Length: 583
Image (tube, rainbow, N blue to C red; front, side):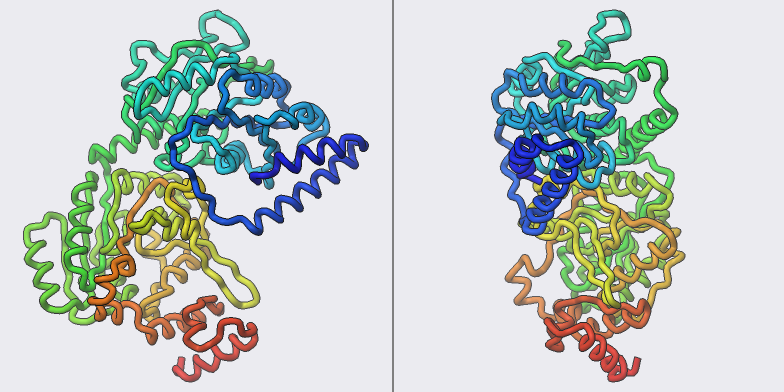
């Protein structure tokens, strides 16, 4: 969508000579074709370092807005130089809206973003943020307007202190100076106690400018909180960043236009419920950080060689986990010297319970045995070469508790070089085949697209939380030797009517062996045990037998020279393979 404004300027100027119906239909078709064309060729966007002062102002316009022209005029007339203004509309826009927007098309600061399909305010804001070129984000309600020097004043305040990420100022309702019309942030708390003040005073409507990197710690806007999404981000920001990162300017820079409907109707119960939910989750973050939690968390870790890495993984958890927890370590048939090393280093470790297997049961088999010993209400599977980060556990738990239907939550998992391994997963089923793909694979972890919340089709098991109740309902198959069990589990969770999601603000670092050339050469036994082809083939066939779907797996296909062959030949080969293995 980056180039929507260019094509929009061309077509708006040309097509406004036609009648309204012709304009609407032709413009929509051309925008859709252009959008489809560029989305099909879209490649990874390199996010620039956060060192420029460009501000992106986003205004989401709906058909019921009476004052969005004044909002746009106030945004585009800002005295601040380095500015872009993105107006977001949905495909149901009326000709009245488009007639007004025509007057702004030629403004070099203006971009028109058509959000297709429109899924609510948070979705629209997130799409615009991803499309933005500024390192600072500000959102203006389409019924509000700003003083001409609003951005200049607040940016001056932000740049006057180092390390600032969030600036906000006052608003005035309907231009009145009467008591209650100002939404004053308590002056005695300016610059300190930001989190507790926001939590207490429910300060929702203030003019703010946020550094884009904040969303990498909070996640982008959460659609659960449409209508009060700014309050959610403000509280998350205040939790994750120190008070010194915030600046408060006690000036009225923002004017809020309350409609007649808004004056006679109090806040709806639906909005109140969302506000209460935001507060509950904010308080839970504090409680989890302070170790106050009435549930037990079980970390289930498999070890197979890589003994030093295993100890570092456990120490990493111990340094960051504050809530009640236990660590279940299952050594999956390591050499005797590796097992002795673990015994020696964990002899006095608290809340760590170790089981040593005399043979390698494979990843699925090892996890089955390990989870039998877990007593927790939440089970977190963690590979022993993964290191967690501050706040990771808290965010996974909060996401898991956000919906009783959510049964699995996965992390944003990155390699040591900063490239994303996965941020959840998707699958496509077609003609008896199923293809699993990793969300955000290969993107840089600072790419703002990796801050999106996703409802996932599947989640890899190496850095994922499961609720114990779903573990008890899943049929774990012994036919998975070393792969594909997590794919099967995801299908079962969905078939049972539950959800699988990601948590983009819960980051872990995967120190995969392939990122260490020295270990790749020396740990041949580990590689042979972990990635043997026979186990992969048997697991592949087991998935087909259980789900009547053939996995689209290029590595498996390459073993049998099936890449590029027709589906019919692949199906015939898989059925012959089943006979060969007598399955």
